[in-house]
Amino acid sequence: METPKTVKIIFPRTGQECEVDAGDTLVDATFRHDLPIRYRCERAVCTTCLTEVMEGAPNLSEMEERERQTLAAIKAQPHWRLACQVSVLGDVKLDYLPITDPRRKPEKGGIEF
Image (cartoon, rainbow, N blue to C red):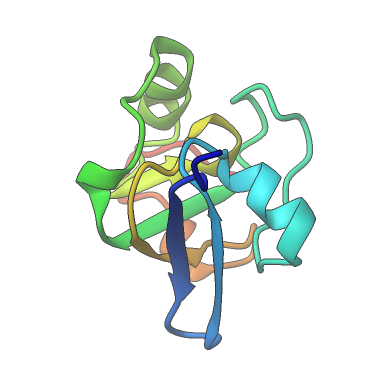
């Protein structure tokens, strides 16, 4: 039997890292490895799991329409993703953006959280 391919998820700011099966979602990985990502709805609605992709964006699954709409509504930066919607296909470096993180503050004229 062939060993499943694993990929590495690294959080440089906290020093946490883990290996997961390719294709796992970030929320699955968080649940199993106690990663620093918090989540709530798991439906791309609440943005609790907003995550910054520091390196390896091409190693994540393509964005589906629901995630795209939610990120557009909050005027998210292009390198932000919702962990509940993302499958990890290769090595990535990430940073979680908690609700209180000042990076979440929209630019002038944006939506308030």
